[in-house]
Image (cartoon, rainbow, N blue to C red; front, top):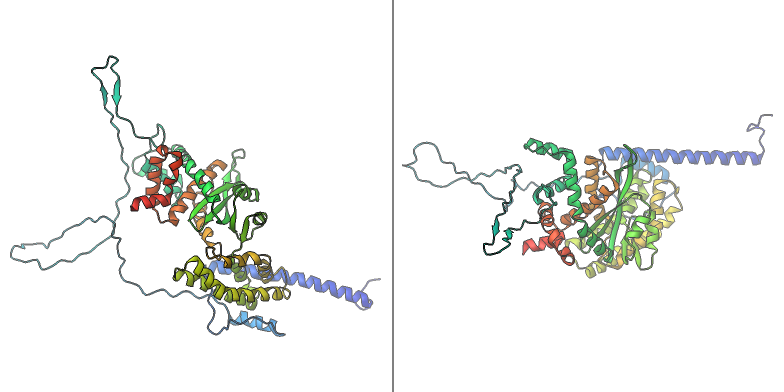
Length: 503
């Protein structure tokens, strides 16, 4: 006998209705996830990349209390786009013609009117400036060492001028050329094969394998500086950590690329940066690097950091920017709830901008945060758990709320010390050049090459943080690192090079 709705018992009807409801819920959730993904892809293609969030003028920043007509209001919000639409920041008025830098050399070209000027008097002049470029040029530095013999010596020993320390033992490149190759690749993301082509245009034909060897040897000279940097980084009392991927060729698998990872450690207080390569994203990498570290550790909440945060002596910090991105993605899923949180976070970041604009001391910044940020965070701390009970946990808004609940103590910790940052954005900014490099030279040639690249990435990032010319620093360092005493090698740090040059 076929079972139909007409011959079902009451219990069977209830069970059937429950199954249909569960199926509908699952399908609704899948549809919502697809809508969310489509909206995110559309924003990636056409939307603004900035994380700045503009509150509409007609929107009051009041706590959200859903009413029975919430779903209808939600639809209206989507159709009319009433709340939380990003707006482009207005461009400032143009300040006129670009002022050329004062430090550049000036080549003057005097131009007089044509014809006989003997009966005329010069009454003034007009000056027009243009910015021009002389392409970098190669030259040969030839060391000629004269030999002398002592006439009075019986053995007649020879005396010869001492050859300066070579950047690469018995190698051709000088410090300037080697520094240029390394800066072009790791700072300006120009692959070696393109550098070979450029040299060829200048009439110098050097095999790519030769330049690869120079690159390897040049980076190896920085190992001693990097080792000191590792020890110094671990001694800092406050670190931000993040990770980014890097493709690495496997030597035992022809053509195969391995997914490796750069773990990046940034010390906000002194501006030190440390890249370290690890073959995996497992927690063993940062655990080994941070063995013995004590202090604040700020992360985005990735699971690999959870155990580190539980280590005695380490205080975990959260990242409000990471939380904000989750609510930003949830705007298409639940504009009212996501928009409310974003308006509150906007207030937190306004406090941070105020502290930065007024150049507050750490003590003053802490005081300002406790006065203006703490009340906002306390309200969010009450509101978020209440609203989480009303949403689907696996929806975009559900995941955003859950992230805050799970990270709440870490997210609030920054209030307790004015030295601490509200988010992990500084270390994320450090990582961006690696992403540009990935697009250009695609992969590292080996695991060892990836770690050598980590060394130069670390030092170039410090150059950027301290506004040091990376080429001048690297040329100076390559020239002097072999003759610098071990206990004085930190004098070659980029920040110390800047101090030396300015004195």
